[in-house]
Amino acid sequence: MTQDSFDTIIRNGTVAAASGMGVMDIGISNGKIAALAPSLAGKAPSQIDASDHYVLPGGVDTHCHIEQISGAGLMNADTFETATRSAVFGGTTCTVSFAAQHPGNRMRDVVADYAKLAEKGALIDYAFHMIVADISGENLRTDIPKLIADGHRSIKIFTTYDKVRQDDHAILDIMAVARNEGALVCIHAENDGLIRHMTDQLLAQGKTAPKYHAASHPREAEIEAIDRMCRFAQFTGARVMIFHVSTREGAQIIRKARANGVPIEAETCPHYLLQTVDILERENPARFMCSPPQRTADDQEALWEALADGTLQLITSDHAPYRMDETGKFANGADAPFNRIANGQPGLEVRLPLMFDAIVSRGRGSVQDFVHWTSTAPAEAFGLSKKGSIGVGFDADIAIWNPTATRTYGANDLHDNVGYNPYEGTTIMGFPVTTIAGGEVVMTDGRLIGSPGRGKRVAMAAQR
Image 1 (tube, one colour):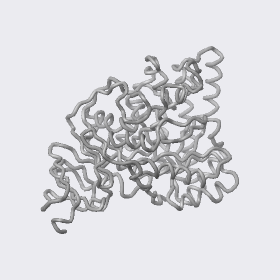
Image 2: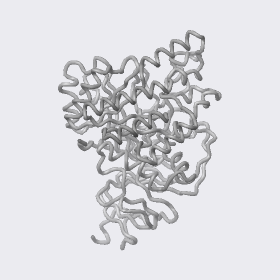
Image 3: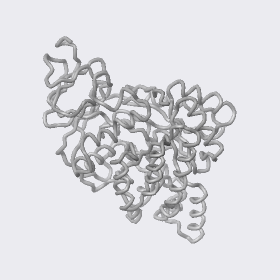
Image 4: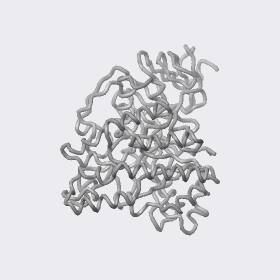
C-alpha cells in the first residue's frame, strides 16, 4: 500500500479492534477500513489525532422506531433525518428500524414506501425489520419470502396490542417461514390476556393515572410470553430474538432455553438497566412510560448478570419518540387514562453515552464489553456483516470517545424531535466527540457535518 492511498488516517487512538485493543493508527479508503498498524507511514488528505481517546466501532442500534405509525395509528415524532441526526451525536452509525404493516396492507408495499422515507432522510446506514400484522393473501406466501431473499431478514411480531398482535397459530406459521427462508423472528413478548385483565381491573377502580401503567403490564405477562416463545422456537427450530427483556424470571427462562440448545437470543435496553418502576411517581410521568414497564433494582441486577454470562447479547435503545403534547403522548387528551397514552422514550442519542458510563466508567465491564453489547453483537445478530467492528475490510463506521469528558443531561438537549430528555439531571463520564460514517466525518465537537440522504440501506446476510 502506497503512502498516498488513504483518504483519512486516525492516529494514536486506543483502538478496540476485532483483533484486540491497543494504541494504533487506522487508514481509511473509499469508506472502508484499509489498514491497522501501530504506526502508518505517509500522509492523507484528512488526519485525525485521537491521542488519549478511545477509537471504537460506531454504535449499531437494532431497535429503533423511526417515522413509523404505531399500532394505535399515531405517527411518532422523528423522521429519518431527525432520528439519525440524533444518532450521530450519540456515536451511533447504523440503525435498524421498523417497516410497520397494518391489517389490510401488502408487506411488499409497506417496505417499498418505508424505503423511500429512509432514502430521503437518513444520515447514516440503515436496515429494516418487517413488522408483520397481516399474514393473509400473498403476504406470508409470497411477499415475506421475497423480501427476506432481498435482505430484509428480520421479522417483528407482537403477542399483544389490538391492531398488530398475532395469535399462536399465526406466530407458528411465521416462524416456520422464517426458519425455511433464513430470517430472524423478533418478538415483543407479553401475554395479552393478562394485560387486558389488569387494565380492566385498574380502570374499574378509577386508577387511571400514568403511574398505573406498570401495574397493567404485570411481570407475569412477560414471563409467560417469553416462556411460550422459547417453546415455539424449540418446536419450530426458528431463530428467535426476544426484545426488551425486563425481568429476572424472563432472563432465567432464556438462560435455561439456551442451555438446552434452543435458538434464542435476547436484548435489553438502558431504561431497564438504569430506571426502576418508581420513576412513574415523578412529575410528568408519561415521559417515562414504556412497555414492558420498568421493574425493580433486583431485576436490574439480574439483567446485568445475564449480559455478563451471555444470556442477553444486545443492548438497544428501543427509541420510541413521542412529544409531550397533543401530537404524541397526549393525542387522546391531557387527562387521558394510562392505557391511552403513547408508550416509549427517546433513546437513540443517549444509549451509548449512558452505557459507556455504566459499563466502562462505573466498572460494570470493560471497553470490549461495551463494544460487544452495543455494536458487535447487534451487527452479528442481524447479519450486518461489515458493521459493528474495527478491522480491515469493515465499513469505516467509527466513534472517537473522550473517556474523561463529563456531561449532565438537560431538560431538552437532544438532537431528535421529541422535546425532552428522560435522563435530565443524569451526569455521565465518557462521550463521543467525533462520529465517522462510511469514512466521512458526520459529527465532530458538537457540530453536525453529514447531510440527510447520505445513508444507504444495508442488506442483512442469511443467518441459518
